[in-house]
Image (cartoon, rainbow, N blue to C red; front, side, top):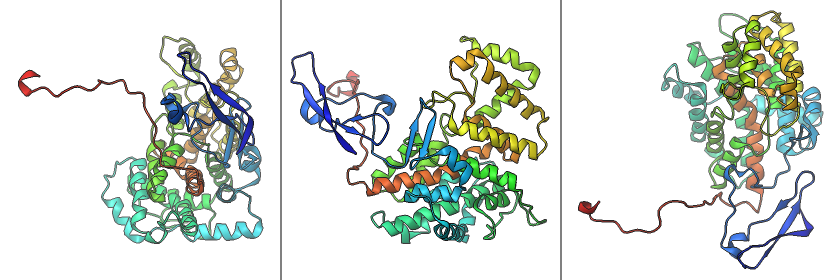
Length: 433
């Protein structure tokens, strides 16, 4: 973080003295105006609902350029990582700042693999949930409960303990997510296997059963691995900011990640791929697409095109291009190109990519559109979509949390407000109210 030679000057029309504020330059991206002394010098706060124009931290993990459609993890383009690396290599990169060499990769993968089992006592937690409990509800509870079992890694000021907690969370999230699914369908839990890769192990725990041998399909495993890579981090979004805010109080890492999962559960954040799939089911068939498109174009209809466009990306979401490729690979591998739902999705994609209305508004299919289709093709129920998102994003949350703890500039989060309630008044006697 380098201070710029230029400064920002804030002037007031009421005759108050103007204030000079430092400007900081990042490696890439917009400069930021340092307003930390604004209140002390002027008695005024800034007003920024949703923090849309506020940098709450400095970070060296992830960079997004929404106008260019660019996403970098530690400087590496997502397009290169998704093609050349697996998920655990990406985890290592996000945690440590550099990609692992062959020896580091083997050691890291082995360490994560050997921490995938959960404490046997955790099995009893699941019995306390109703069978129809949403998997995200179960994940919030069980991830938070991990703090009850690992008292040896709760000292957030100890870098080694933070590393141990990071490994445990990365390793155990797939196990807990798969258990949440198995519990909801009344099937026995499948213990993790040390001979399988991270993504293959999750699919085994999700879809295996004690009655027969589970056959790993490399195309499907690679598809899941790509979903995890593409969702691993996305800068200071709502759930990541939640993790940082919770962490700023000194809360333990398991509590912070549980807070992130709770935030991700919101339909405006982690539920977008489920919403896209629901929309496809409501359209019903290819014949109904033209009528649906007309409703979308009618501002008064209230009908929205889910899975298209993005709040940050004003260009094609770089993750969507990669997920599109994977989507077509999976449909071909499983012979689902002619399945009514997937045929409908591909037709809608074709129209959106060619219709001037959508092209001019840059309403391209986003990563949620394709990942919902891929997960559905893999046999993953919609109730688990956000759980898999949480599994992927855990590494981003942990990396961001770790960075925050080590940042000497971080303080406990304390947003301010513009108060618009009643001024001071006296409490009247009860017979005068």
